[in-house]
Image 1 (cartoon, rainbow, N blue to C red):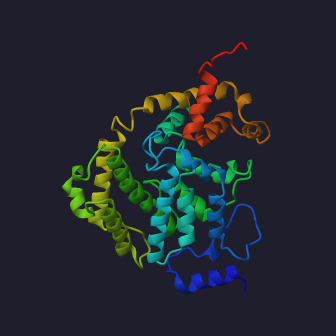
Image 2: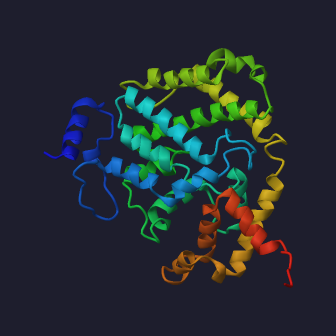
Image 3: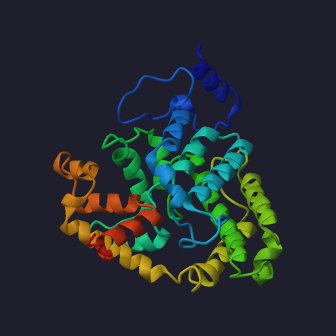
Length: 336
């Protein structure tokens, strides 16, 4: 028995009967020899961590567009917080932590520069539409490794696709990530908003704070407990009804108070105009795309609109700004 087989055996002995066992995975689209050390979900986690798309999350907006300061969340730090919460819940419920972590690490790979502002523009201008969760799957199935993708397991890809509010993941681990995503962003967006002086802790309505707590620490603790206590040894993942109602109410309040606030949205119009300009330019000049994307169109017969979206969605905030300057902002001319 090698190390991987020993891990799989211990999963059978220790995990919940509702957990997704690594040995029972539905597998990958392309056959691969098993690793002698890592389970299939551990390999998926590692592939996501080493992907180019994951590294680019470091410079992609979470809520605040190009914030001044090192302590605001980016799409990368959000992803890491989701993974931490998901592992905590999965471990307490005796679910497969590695599967939960892999889904969490991959769930936002398809996000555009400038957060949901960039996503909204691509959804408007592309005839196929655009959604970050679908783009995340396209990245791991196709874009990474020059059209080969990461060849992840079906369970991880399903969890990535279904992490959105209306999603219905096929595994309990996927459901854990779906809730962990909300728990993470609701709390860290409050934390960042307080740091940005958009709101104060005392501004949070008592109908929510009296139930969930009066600090980020208290809210995280209460929400995580709310999931664990309601889901332990059950075939479904849910949250205490009172806490869930308070969490969703707080989410709605955040949309009014923070997400639509003029401070984080002050540059949104400019960001949207940049993304649209980049899309229009590359639709007219697809020959100016990087070689890898030209290869997708000419050799792999990919739709030009999709490939242009692939390129723009993959940009970091800073890269998109620099590319816009390069294409549309006149440069000074030195005759010497």
